[in-house]
Image: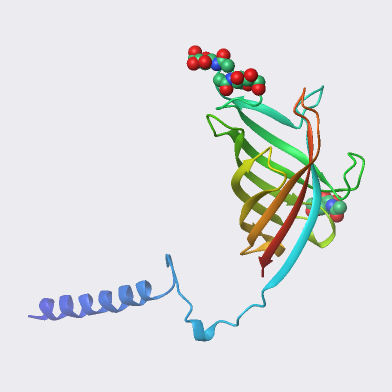
Length: 189
Ligand SMILES: *[C@@H]1O[C@H](CO)[C@@H](O)[C@H](O)[C@H]1NC(C)=O
Ligand SMILES: *[C@@H]1O[C@H](CO)[C@@H](O)[C@H](O)[C@H]1NC(C)=O
Ligand SMILES: *[C@@H]1O[C@H](CO)[C@@H](O)[C@H](O)[C@H]1NC(C)=O
């Protein structure tokens, strides 16, 4: 009888200890904040303008072919490049560096010249140093202006959405080297 009582008391004790342990926040997978408790951040709009320098040629190319059919050339379907292109405030390669475009682009159209473009713009300038904006889109390269969606951002560009407009400022049709003007219209917090 007494051992039954002890046993019973022990299991109650265990129940209390464990239910306390598991009701604390250790290992909470997801916690939602009711809308009413969240202070609404103020949405901002920014326009960024810069020039991207994509260099395929020479001793130190900024974009390098990483995949594609063995016989494919720059403009051929399947040709895939990885890029770390400088972004400058003005169109000249010597203009002030404001960031880098790091990402991948691939020839994704069989009977056309259209890129799948996946780029992170990593900014280096002033208070935007360390913040980034990401785009994913179709770049139909011979159009005067190509629009690509902004799908997110980090740092000062958290929750970024909007669109990027690209237009070719200069291109060397032999090498594929290009300077492209980008205008980004971005909503963010
Ligand atoms: C490249 O090779 C593939 C497979 O052999 C062939 O189908 C294609 O026509 C070739 N393309 C060129 C540009 O030579
Ligand atoms: C590859 O590109 C070259 C040069 O632009 C073009 O002449 C050729 O037809 C292309 N081949 C294929 C298979 O797209
Ligand atoms: C940007 O931030 C990096 C790392 O914090 C720092 O090394 C660099 O000097 C900064 N650049 C500018 C232009 O402020």
